[in-house]
Amino acid sequence: MIDIHTLTIREARKKLTAKEITAVDLASAFIKEAEKKNGEINAYLEIFSNWKEQAEESQKKIDAGVDLPLLGIPFAMKDNILIEGQKASASSKMLENYVASYDATVTKKLRDAGAIFLGRTNMDEFAMGGSTENSAFGPTKNPHDTERVPGGSSGGSAAAVAMDGALVAMGTDTGGSIRQPASYCGLVGLKPTYGAVSRNGLIAMGSSLDQAGPLARTVEDAEIIFDVISGKDPLDSTSIEKDFYPKNNLHGTKPVIGIPRELLSIDGIDADVKENLEKTIEDLKAKGYETKEVSLPHIAYALSVYYVLMPAEVSSNLARFDGLRYGLHVDGKNLNEDYFKSRGAGFGKEVRRRIILGTYVLSAGYADEYYYKAKVMKALIADDFKKAYEEVDVIITPTSPISAFKIGEKVNDPVSMYLADVFTVTAYIVGIPAMSVPSGFLEREVKKLPVGVQLMSDFGREDILFTVGKEITVR
Amino acid sequence: MITTDDVKKLANLARIDIPDDEAEHLAGEITGILDYVKQVTETDVSNVGDQAHGPHNVFRDDEDTHESGLHTKTLLESAPDSDEQYLKVKDIL
Figure: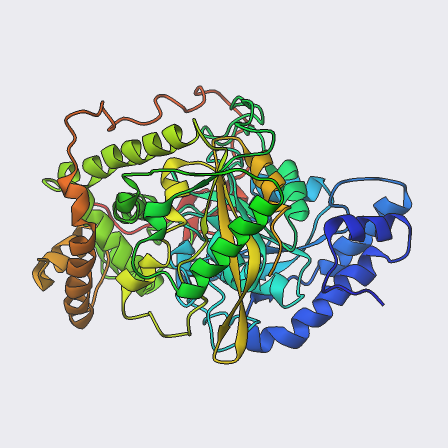
């Protein structure tokens, strides 16, 4: 009998190599849980019919003495990461029946490292949202409290791991889409440095912001996956070599931790979220970590900048869905009507909202007023971080200002929904890496809900996130 | 302030069919979002260098990367309508 609830990649690899378990045993243990719970949780949109064949293939390699970092490890894949021959719908009616004609680079790297893909997971449509309620295929529920959201947009991936339906999962993060669901579901979620992981084969949302990364139970698991998926890819011009950024000396013998006090004094942070952060900081101090206050004067603008730049990129990126080459086609009287009808029927409400908003901020007369000024502000925010990293190695905040909220609570209030991204959007705007690490539980109506803290380091310094992340304990 | 008519014009630019009641609803929501992000428009841009230009000339050279027609069949399988090796669309003119 395998205890899959606490299993890590390293332990699973050890058991597989020692022939204590087979790859089929391991995959079927997760599949069994997934089949039992998915009806209620809706984490998976589809469990792939070939999971067993993949596991048998892995077992053959294990039997032949092959050693790969992820050999036989069962993954859940977000529905916007292409796997050749499988559907990839981005949880949209637009791509409901779209079958990927090639592997994303991330998929290929995981496959080459021995990963098994159990299925594809639910998400906010085209990754637009922070709750997975914007899926065209129904919301995903949080396994810790099924009345609440798992976070989003990678909510299905987070819930799949949290319900023991996969050992680890892949997500994509644009404004917080890996870190926020990781926090709400009690997992580690890593958003790598922009460019560290190839975007080739991800269904694009905001190309200057999107990045794929792991959702895992431990920091070590996230690190193992990051090492596999990162690196330069000729198929993504923005991807970078692993050693692209210099690794300067730390500011102390251990990484020095920066605390952005101004940011932590904004309205709307739950008292117990703050308390959990303070306790986490105290723990780190007790372990010998030095802390320092840092000032990020322009950070108050981050959310506004994000909600100008992201819709602008959304409206441009999603212009490709024309109902002619692939995806949904709704017939009209002429070509122009084909566009209007296909796009009107294919895109859900939040997607339409962001396309319209993006069209507005890019339209003549407003592009300078909104888009260009947001780009300038982005540079000013990046400069704040550059200055901060002259004194500290890592900056700590809560991942989300609030606990997982109830399904339906925020659907009619987009601004309030967007505010939940306040701590996560900055790493996106700047392009630095950030990771959410579980740090405790919050009590909400007799239920215990996970909470996480976010660590942000300088470009290319995921290593510091892993070092500090491993010291953080769930209280 | 974004009006229902503004939303309809934007929807027209974005080639999306939007029903009247949704256009009205969106007008209110987008006004709210623009109100929230308006602090961006107050940014002083005078002391910051040109931010308008991103990556330059990042595409690969225009060369033959594979045999012509190698992926045509696979890609056309995703197309709503095709005729032999072509996508089929309605009259353009």
